[in-house]
Image (tube, rainbow, N blue to C red; front, side, top):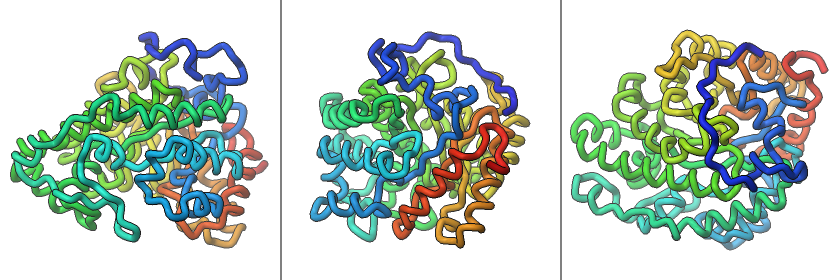
Length: 389
């Protein structure tokens, strides 16, 4: 692994009983492979988890979700905890990712949003004018108690394995809110940021605040890391991202800046991931991330090179990376998939740290046994070397 430039110096504000700070070895996550890799330290084994690992690819997930809507599942703490734990039990992944949805904080704030099967998030009233943005309700702190309870339940069962919290990034949330439903080209938010920048700033600022509140609730309740997902940022140019989006992502991260991120010694690592963002990974880093997620469009070695070539205002260039197994190859013959996984692990050794993941979420049709086999392979490969086990 290459050397990492870090700006960590401030003490963390996490409570002493938090999994990252506790002295109890049965509960401590500070030396877990995932946390060590995200901090640029050598892990005991190659850490791996999968985006959407808790989902439709698992028969046990389909059983417990039967007859229960997506948002309703997210807001039942006992059920959310059970779903979060399922892939850890099955695959032996190195972290759990909190089971929720990026629009959950919208629902908790009182926004009229549903997740329609086969469609995705649908808003009863899209946000398209200054009046619409001004009418958005605040997310009250007590509304997040259901999230805190679910996280607390999950962490109690995980022991020394970390939980990753998450939130949707402001652009992706705002894109749904402008369009009112999923979109292929995200023309609405792109048009708004240029044609009505004040309304865009108000909407994205609101989204940044609720994202930050959502992250903080999870981290304070026991999550050992957190990821900001910007699923649709790849629809933007680097210039538009830097001008109209990055400041709002930075605001979301700023909500946890005293307990997480690159400026906090021993705080929770923060991941920032967006599909199609290979041309501006440094902008994702500079929003306040400890580590950056990479999709399948570039190699991890190339992502490392690009980040190292563009140091940020805090002096950081290269940072730990996450990724980037192509989900399309999960259905390929094993020799093809195995070679690809080995290449990903080897490419990741260029970075200061590497957490193996997919380039996006687990496809619903994925055979769970394949994921288990991938985890076993990654754990068998030598740390920092890739190649042959």
